[in-house]
Length: 80
Image 1 (tube, helix red, strand yellow):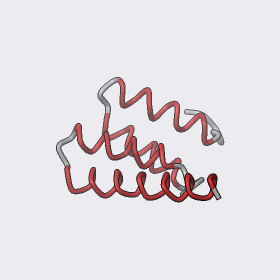
Image 2 (cartoon, one colour; image 1 turned 180 degrees about the horizontal axis):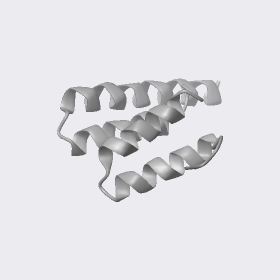
Image 3 (cartoon, rainbow, N blue to C red; image 1 turned 120 degrees about the vertical axis):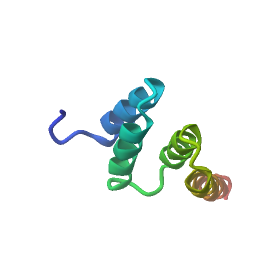
Image 4 (tube, helix red, strand yellow; image 1 turned 90 degrees about the vertical axis):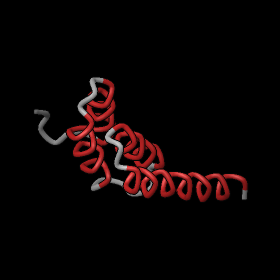
């Protein structure tokens, strides 16, 4: 267990867990990452992918749509 992990550390642990097929634990880690930021589209995207692997499509859709919305907002502000 990492004491006071950074957002980057949490995201890396979550990604590693997902790659190992430990989707429930990866979801918990990604949700921990969301307590530190709510504007990282990649976290929402990866949560959606984890839920897809678990065949929980309603949750997957919710997180994937949030990822898309955040990325569109960030792209629009970048282009403005």
